[in-house]
Length: 88
Image (cartoon, rainbow, N blue to C red; front, side):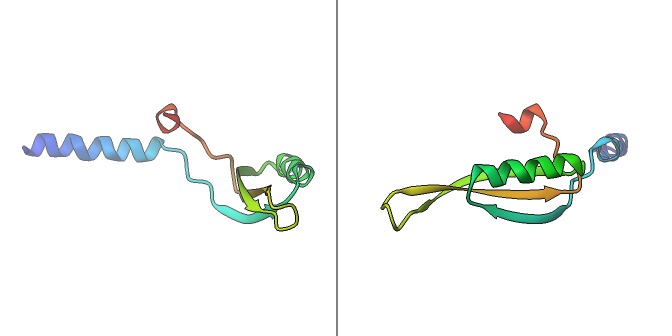
């Protein structure tokens, strides 16, 4: 690699970092057991202009022998930004 190629490579990395959105920081994680709780938390986060990341999972329900849905909600300092490349 020549000095010229190396210089352009470093400059392009600096430009990419300068343009990139800052990564939102995690404030808190909440584990919720109902959709109503989830909606309440989402509305509160929207009013406070906080970002959220939500994931769902199933847990074994010992009483019925089936599964129950649960949600993990992460409150973030700002909304996470997804590029189209990440979605694919």
